[in-house]
Amino acid sequence: MTDLNSIPALSEEQLETLGLLLEQEAEHQDSFDFFAMHGLLTAFAVSPVAFDLAQVWDSAFDQQLSLSAEQQQQLKTLLQQLALEVQAWLDSGQDFPVPADLTLIDEEDEPPLESWAMGFMTAVLLQEQEWYANHEDQVAQGLFPIMYASGLFMDEAEMADIDEDVELSDRMCGNIPAAVIELYLLLHSGQ
Image (cartoon, rainbow, N blue to C red; front, side, top):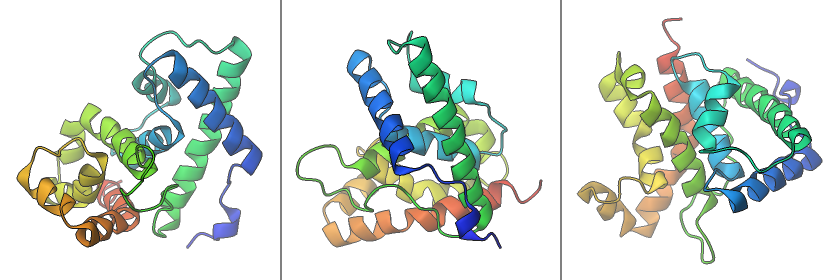
């Protein structure tokens, strides 16, 4: 069991800088905000396939970045540190600390949880074959609350039914931290 105090966490200042850099780039192109980037990094870490930061970069940004070379380097460094933090949490076996309220109710904007789940599902969809290769039913079951929260599958009747019941929706979203760890353990059990 990992000592949770030993997990390499980004400081408040580093988190703020990362959020601002991603926000600045999102104004230039349709790219990931902090929550979506965290979800993307998390899913790549959970994945049964090894990944590198270049894959994260290519998945999050469609085109040439508007950030200066210095800002891009700072962004890469912060993303590497965030990836280490995510990995340490996954290795801890504790429920995964999703950096957003576990609800889709947000009066003003896109709920941060929806953005996080969209980022997570982006990585899953890029590697769908590998994710479902060995434990299709269990992976589908584990992904269900994240799929629901992402909003990407709202056309499916079962998702719409959950959406109509606020309490059920919040319960479904509340399952995400445990589901992330269960998926990680399942997909890495043979390694």
